Amino acid sequence: MTPKVKICGLTRPEDVEQLCGMEIDFLGFVFYPPSARFVPPEKARLFVTMMRELSPMCTPVAVLVNPSLSDVLKLHETTLIEMFQLHGDESPALVCDLQQRGFKVIKAVRIGKTQVVPRWQEYKPDYFLCDTLRDNAPGGTGHSWDIAWLPKDFPVKCSFLAGGITPENVLHFISALRPFGIDVSSGVEISPGIKDIAKVADLLRTIRSYNPSVEERK
Image (cartoon, rainbow, N blue to C red; front, top):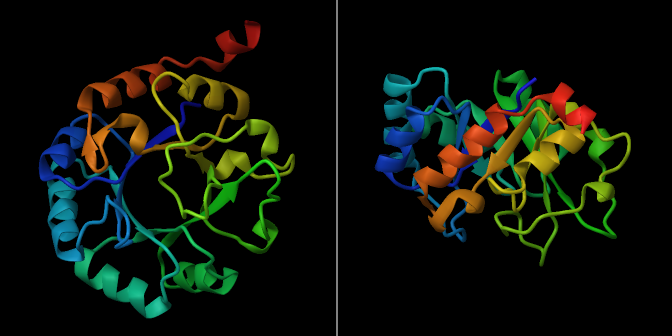
């Protein structure tokens, strides 16, 4: 099955508009103020409205770091987003609480050479997201991780893969792990928050041309 595609860290309406015409599955908006890709909730609501008009099948995702339940509910009220990516040290209880309220949840885990993915068995999100552990940054580092570092029993079939993914290396990740989806931000950017539409097109061509049976014969 062809992996789903999530492009994350959008900040400009023109990028949202162009990506909506490319049959992308998810668009991610960062609500973490220290990030160079941060967007105010009021601006994100305009993006979500645009998505509903131009590409109703494309799902907006809110990316947060260590929010409280009230933070998430307030953000939902402002932006209308119903899928949340938790990119910090959020508890399994918060994941469960949000799901019980009807929201979809992606829980990010950070992968490092000497880092055992902490407590992932305690979480029951709709999806995991595997990102790179680096300098205690919550994400968006642009650096890759080695697929050998992933625990053998990790549920990659219901996970997004992130961390330094580009049009040039995406086939390595999807052919080796066959994830649910691919999450890309810096790998298709001109600068933080400014997307390179030509790179996005290259990424999509590579992913959509992937044929598991052909790759297995190589």
